[in-house]
Length: 408
Image (cartoon, rainbow, N blue to C red):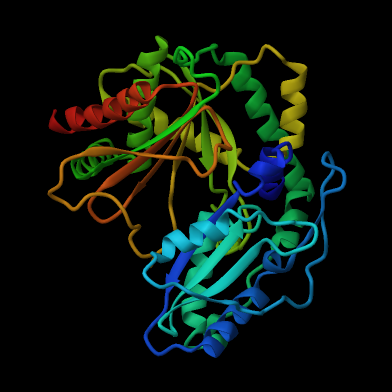
């Protein structure tokens, strides 16, 4: 169902945007690792995961099919001499080339060298193959396989096993409950939308707020309220959006990881799905109280995160007046032992917003993607029909709400 969600997001994209579901990574190599060891580690990683050996029948966009995994993969590992270019920049250029999911597997790897010495594995993948969690699993397995391919452990389940469980009687009952969750929220949610910028005409802006004080504040409020850090950040974000919309209730889209069962935690595929949640009293002055309400609303949503997007689309088609979500939120989590994400300020630098040209504009109209490293919080806001000034106002509102709540 996660893969089907990806397909629904991308099936109507024009050819010039077929690269947008791609993601690029540059995995550093230890000194002295040669091309043969890298190729063997890639082969070991790909052999374990059927999603890396799968192609798709996409002739009927309304009824896509997943072909049986190929027994073997093409393990040629082209070499790129990097020179002085940053590995991440080279990987991003490779990600700009779309995949033909009917003819090829949805990933590609390149060995990056500097003066003939291997320095990085550049790994590019389509989102239908692996989400952010799964990509980190692949990185960890690749690093382990470089030294001990035998010690990777039992082969984890694949997407076919997950699909089979989703269509058992119990799985079908969960699908029905998820659809009922959508229907109930559509009945309760008010129509609320951020006012668009004059003359925006579908333009997209993207800015990222980096702040060490905001991370410390979010943790302080979370500890005090007894909820997750992600709930606190979402509450602060929803509070700002509600003020901008002039409403007390917001229908929001949450990104559900759907990895809450130990059996599927290490499955390499795309399991992310958007699920609605209703946040009431969103302009509540006490952020801790709002965060507790958001926490339980979010947990209810995540219980219904694994759903049939085709059935949801049919539900929405029958209800053309259904309210649109006012905003969307994703708190990015990755497996344990993941390296701290690059980017963000050093601990003593001032909070700031940086502006980027978005690689992809797939997704909701006002989408905040939060992540944190050892010392800072980063919130990337991608917004359609909003100006930079509106985008910046929402980010600074979130920032100041966190700091004010922590000081109380």
